[in-house]
Length: 416
Ligand code: NDP
Image (cartoon, rainbow, N blue to C red):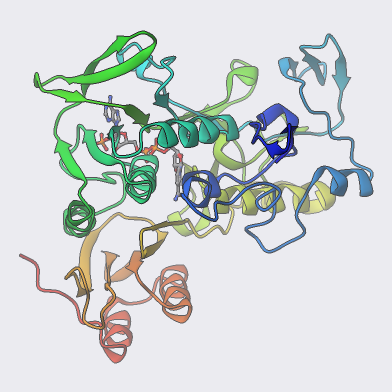
């Protein structure tokens, strides 16, 4: 609440450039709830790590100059300078690049209409406010969700909570194609279907039917026409590397860094969504993770490296001991994933909608050469989640994990 008119308050949108940096997970979850929605300052940086919340006051109190409403328009790593859109040149000794990623747009796939009043992306506070406004104006109406990944799944759940009918469209065979096995996806798709969500798979949007600046329907490549009062787009993200293209080494669509988060220019560090780094757990394979946990941990790693520069070449060549981690919460569900989803997937637990104990609890281990390389668990307790994380971290033998799961009443499922 930051404005008022007459005797009643009007909620004015906060814009990204007006606020201190914040963590995004709330935007696709609590922020979209019809009641008791999360709002800043509840999710400024470090809120999710249960650390001090970095409000504007925090920066001031710690002697950090926070320059908002200013865009860096070019960087010169040889000169060690940045040029801003206010015409200022900033010199640095050490630079940390945390430019993150941006939402891929429909136009990249030849579809026009992203600027329509009822087409919503979800990356920033402005985006989330636009979506809240669109949901309020189409209560009981139809939403088409384009994409069946993180944004698609979490926004579809939010739309249902706001009593809007949802149809999800994506080209793959099942939702969360980058992570879920078909069996895991089947559970969530059935769960969503029971909430009224319709899945349209194996096709994509060909065009949007726009009239008076608003989308009225989405036209699919297979010829179908889906009427829409609002459209939510979650079709992936791209790392914001543009300032450094041609100046720093790149890999996996991001800025390549060593295990100390140091780029090909020793004075420049990169972290979070934009950084591609060697992961010790994956045999030093260079990966880029678009996730808040990675942002938090690579930030700490970079600062440790900057404060203790004595690591030397051996340390520089060492991969980072990061355990890849993803999670989501939708409806009454909550899942966690650790490690790498390569190898053979072995499922465990009860995949029925209500689960054995009235709450779904199941998962999968990805097994490579007899060892657990990755683990997914829905409905796990804190201890069970930690046990799965630990099994992945130490590359436990699958037989040991099976015994541990069985002692919790979670047996491996027979494959169909
Ligand atoms: P994802 O990569 O997770 O999913 C992209 C989805 O878009 C896939 O289902 C893909 O389908 C689909 N898709 C791709 N192209 C098209 C197209 N032309 N038409 C229709 N569907 C298409 O990206 P999101 O946009 O969901 O998420 C963006 C970022 O936000 C990611 O970095 C994600 O990690 C982050 N995020 C993370 C959350 C979390 O960790 N809980 C929550 C929210 C966001 P297919 O696979 O079938 O090709």
